[in-house]
Image 1: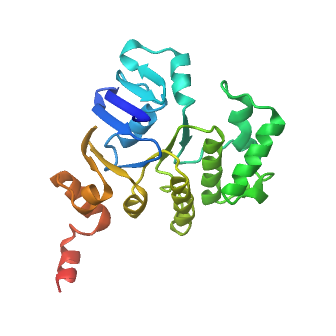
Image 2: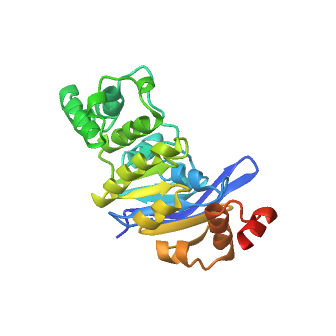
Length: 263
């Protein structure tokens, strides 16, 4: 049985139909990597999974919670759906005026469905910071950290909510190349531990090594999906092949570069 089930999601911004009838299933304990060109709708899809975006129609089910957007769900309905997820943002979105530990425990103490005692929340928060390699940074502020460290705090904050589904929105795209590996290594560790994850990323090598399912999105629809071997090594659809060629070899369409390679 699927942990996540999506049926018929549609999302429009103005006259631009960004998501056009997407269906998607994610099984417990698996990693689904969503790839596609910029502006294809993959981030909107991810944000629609937990109500950060409100589709005009479609049904999203996570665990035992179902939201039918065509029926105009209440804020409480969406909040319950969101409580099943932990979201890791591209740009960290940490509170600059709070310490690292306070950022991790904020949702535990003040979240509508958790409200843990401060002592219990702090103990769990410290444990999670230890797990992501930042146990000694609990009293630091986000401005004291590197981009990679801030992203690891963001992951610890998502884990603190004990979600059924972890959502990652291009978690390495804002990082310096030298520290991308630190975040990807942590995500690999989470995958080995059995966390269910949906990851929007351009890190094709990560998808090859970690994903159970790869979903290629273009122009608001799923063009192709399957195992990494099926989608990344042997794509069936011409659009998938074109996208991968451009991502893996950005100079492929440069005539001068092609001539150099041929020689």
